[in-house]
Each structure stands twice: as structure tokens, then as C-alpha cells.
Image (cartoon, rainbow, N blue to C red; front, side):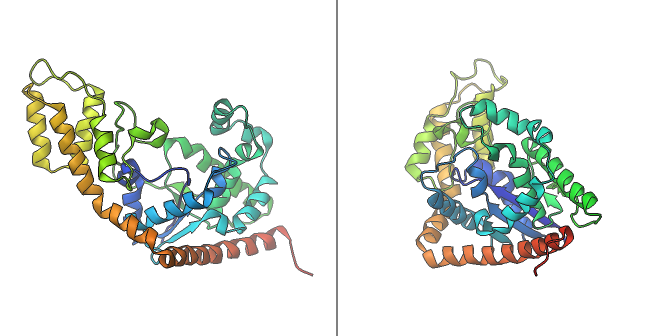
Amino acid sequence: METVLSGIRPTGNLHLGNYFGALRNFIDMQNEHNCFFFIADYHSLTTHPTPHDLHGNVRQILVEYLAAGLDPEKSTLYVQSDVPEVIELYLFLNMNAYVGELERCTSFKDKIRQQPENVNAGLLTYPTLMAADILIHRATKVPVGKDQEQHLEMARTFGNRFNRLYNCNYFPEPQAFNFGKELIKIPGLNGSGKMGKSEGEGNAIFLADEPEAIRKKVMKAVTDAGPTVPNQAKPEAIQNIFQLMRVVSAPETLSYFEEQYNSCHIRYGDMKKQLAQDMIAFTEPIRERIKAISADEAYVSRAARIGREKARESASKTIREVREIIGFKSF
């Protein structure tokens, strides 16, 4: 059985893009693999060193993961800072990471351009912290996007370097996880790009959004004056609206508005009203579970405790064996 690991920063609520992206696959994977899902609160400090409500953000993400379908009994869902062994492995890996290779990391170069007033050591050693997250459970598969491929390569580098320096074959080489099918790309409401909070608050439909918030966002979605000739190609913003309808609406609803567009009779106001209603209906079960789980403090605490215990059991075994390999022994 493969050991799979993935994490998310506690800096924003889950939205439809997250759900139709990796999250649905994670829900399926927990039945077939040894899965570790963690909330990366340490990672968030590299860009948000003084968070307003770190605990509240972490709790909300934990609740939304549970509501979306991750099962703490089937997988290991935990908070990164609940596993101090990660930081010990991070220290060991930093001892064998070179400044030059860390400075050449693409994400470090990007971040120092984005936040020149906050170029901290955590940004520089971000790849070793990510490697520690992966290697602490000796994960063999890691779902990553294009922007994280270099970090996964560095995790392999640090694991192999440890094996070489200490003349062992302890850490496996983690590989990118292939879901085996094309992930659904969920566009934003601003007319271009993907759905995400970084593109603006009104660009994303969050799983916890109330119906009125969804209606307001959808009705403000970018459109144009409409087609002027039959079967006219759709510009990107209009393709986005149809793609959103494709994933939340009934096939016959989509077909109706496709026909209206192709015959130059499309009324975007009507289409957006229908899209908003379909989004509300689609998110309602998850939204209600979010409310129910959030109100159940005992369940949230129990889920966090189960995740912490399982993650620490795995991590403490790794740290114990790593310390023995390096040569740390008690007197």
C-alpha cells in the first residue's frame, strides 16, 4: 500500500476549485492508500508571520476537510504543529542542505520579489520543511501542482543525501502522485484564471458561503454583450461561466443555455440566476455539514486528537530511527 501525503495552508477557506481539484480524489484515495493529510500551519508563517487568528483558521480548515468527506478513521488528518518531530527532522535536513541550492529555488526567488520587506530564514529553508513533512512519514507519493514539483525534487535530493552521508537506504524516493485522470479545472468568476482567493474575494465560491453570498458573487461574474452571429466562439470569460455550469448544473440546463448562446438569444442574467441556484443546491449538503461539525466541539477535538496520535506514532518511529542512524544515543 502506497503512503500518500498532502497538505494545505490554513490561510483561506475551501472553495469549489479545491473540491473539484484534488479534494475529491483525496476522499477516494483514503479507501485505497495509507493517506496523511495535514494542515500546514508552520508553513503559513513564512508569508504570514503574525497571523490574526491562526487557531481559528486551522480549526475552520479542519472542519471543512471533515465536512467535505475526509474520514479521520480511514486517513490521518492532522495539524502540522501537533507533530514536533517534523521540526526535529527539519533541523537534521537543514544541517545537510546548502545555502546555494536553497537560494536557487524558484519559489524563494518568487517570494523575495513578492515580499521584499520580509525575506526571512523560513522562506529560504521552506524546501527543507516541506521535505521534512514528506520524509517524516516516509511517503512514497505526493500530489503536487506544477509550482511544487521543484520542492518534491528537493525532498528526493535531501532524502538521498541523508542515505548517502549515513551509508544507509532509509528514506524512499517520493514521487509525484498521478490521479490517473485529468483534474477538472474550475475557473474563477472574474473572467480569467482559476478560482482562488488570491485572485480576489469575489472570484471564488467557498464551500461555506451562504446562499445570498453565492448569488451576489455569481451575478457579478464577468460576461460580455453576447454573441452577434450564430455559433460564435466563446471568449474566455464566457467559457468560464459555461464551465461552472457544466460542473454544478443538470446536463439539460447546460444544453439549454448552449443553444441559447449559439442562436444569439442568450440572456446572461437568466443564466447567472440559474447558475447561482445550482451552485447553492450543490454546496448545500457540504455547507450544512460544515455548520453541524463546527458546532460539535467534541467531534472536532476528537478528530484532531486521532490525527495527532496517528501522525505522531508514525513520526516518532522515523525520528527514533533517524537519531540512531546519525549516532544520537542516550547515556
